[in-house]
Length: 405
Image 1 (spheres, rainbow, N blue to C red):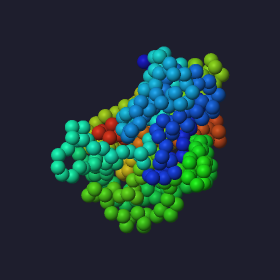
Image 2: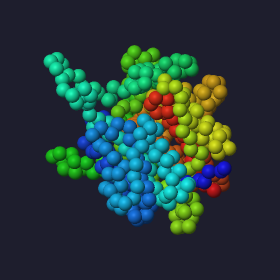
Image 3: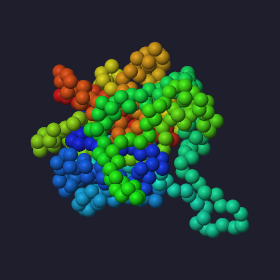
Image 4: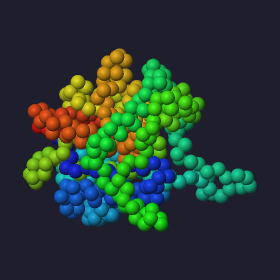
């Protein structure tokens, strides 16, 4: 049965802050409520019209029932439904997918979906202290030393080894990382992220409240030569701190409804979503599994990669878009290089940052706004994009985005 398309009526995100940076003291609910309020304002929607809020998070730390707190703080009536989604880095796209299901089956008419993360607030754990401790040292567990809980292997090792398996070199990953920064800077300077970002006021101590409006992680002086000097981390073969994103903070949200509901209420969609996919595989398959999610999403729509004007594959590591594009191109590296011309055309998480609970929705929004710019330049046809993102323990999500009739 053909899936009913879902309309994106409004979308926004905070600037993405770096680890220990400007946003480090804000809670997940504060970040999420800020963007939800702006999304409601952009849509011209009364908060009471929202039936459901779905919000993703990966490392909630001390915050709990994050979606519920965001709903209340955003002025949405407390009798409305909210739920928090954890599917690792896929979480905010999982929230979009689940909210879209509610809309399609008639459980909701209007929904808010997105995600939030503040990796700077991730606490240390004393996992054995519940029942006391005898003589000797106490060990704190740091959640940010991120390893697969099933295999115990660091994510960087998983990505680096898959890169080697598929013939993706360290140099290719460094080149991709430098490309991410340079393309992001070009896009930022052209004003392309102005549509996405809503400024947020932050307490700057003696300076008082200041408006924070730009992504914080980008490194303009990045070169391949500088990246080549960095050593691989955790003993992996290819992944360094330079060809992976840093730990980040931010939130993303969008207002969703069915296309026919939008039409009935005179709302003009920014884009439509269809072809959602949830993929799963072996816990070690972190770099290759977005390719499977993209294939699944395309199959549901009857579209192909050739139909896609833009492709967003999350740069959890540079290895991820490189390996996934290699697979999507049928293991033909020349074809993969051509395909990569359409991937992350405005840079990716290596430059923008990767607040894990919020990134997936950011990818959808980035693809949407890029498609809208292309449609505005030539509205003779619809424009399509596909998003793919990996998550820990062998998970991935995908969705197809369309702009234009």
